[in-house]
Image 1 (tube, rainbow, N blue to C red):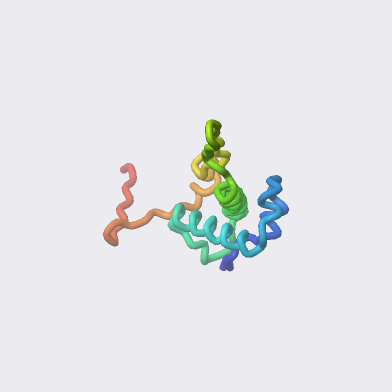
Image 2 (image 1 turned 90 degrees about the horizontal axis):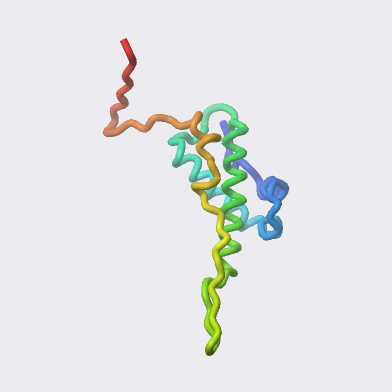
Length: 126
């Protein structure tokens, strides 16, 4: 059985090359890890409660936790636009898009078919 959390804050800090993520507190990284794990569970419809956690899933959680940590830091201190008398500016966002992380390559092998209305229909060629 794969006990949660699947990765530790130390592993996220070691993996990340982003200084803001490396300096993030363990308590905040724990929340980022929990969000990443829940994303993986929801995406795959698989709680990974039986057997050992696959390395690909652990890698996906590390990548997601780093992205969530980075996005939280950026959102907290980034100024979108500001105006002073006759001067104004707008800062571009540098948040990491979760869709752009290409997690499907890591997680698609572990997706379980979700039954609709309690019935799973499987068809095969005769």
